[in-house]
Length: 356
Image (tube, rainbow, N blue to C red; front, side, top):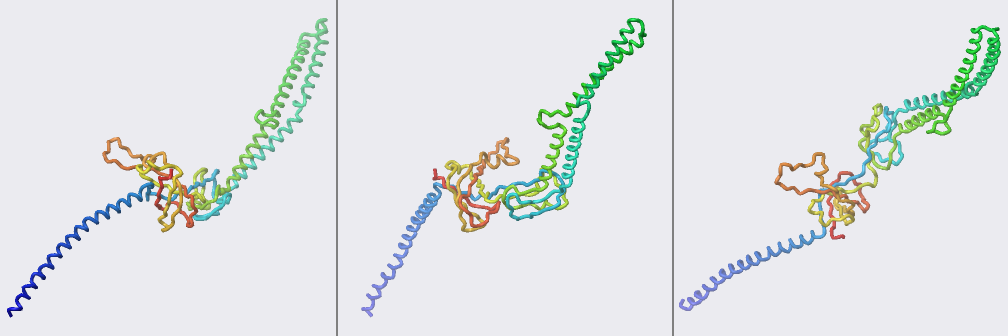
């Protein structure tokens, strides 16, 4: 029993030393963790900050496409519709047709006016007043009246003729001279009717007016067939209904042009300092994950979006809240998209401002 006591006494300090080292290890771990975590955050922040240098990005960007509003140049009733929403059309393809009958009537009226003018011209060319026959007859009458007056005047002076007969002979001379003046006036009037107008040399004014009216009617007739000005996709064609009265110049459908896609990106005003036209851009379309398109800055807007809105923001009362404005930037798509781009699709745009 006396020899066992030292063994028991020697085991007691060993069991007390082990728990004493554990708190020291945990304390060092905490110190190391407190030092490493901020360092990792600092390194991560530096890496993120470095990744943002030389480029600016925005998710306030949308696909846009050039659109053409189609309207008729003449009014009338729609009699035929050949397209519907979503149809792809080629340049010159017939879209719809307007009733042609009123314009064919106008052409017939113009033809009648031309025929009447031509008949009038033909009649004038054979008119005695124009040929000079009336003037020749009037001159002969003057010669006869003057000879008659000379004979009677001699008889009157010898007392063989009364004053009444003498005055009657004088009156016949005056009448013959007046008839010559009238014949000359009628000839001048006939020549004026046949004369060419200075605005249309070589053509009778009445005939020219009729032909101009006919040309206008034929032009309107051709405009009753409305065709696509360019290749594209038809949209908003639900307003086209057979029997509907169409108003001249009022848009009735919209044509989205092929190959006209671009992106309108609204960048913060603070992102424009290093942005220049021609810089590279990357476009990611939300509708097609993984699709990355190449582009470049084509134009930078001349004003902020709010400046050109229907109701521009007013700050006459001194609003103390400063709002960061956004400026529209047009991004031209330089790579061909394997997927169809639709107007209004949301995109993320990154512009590499280190391209100078």
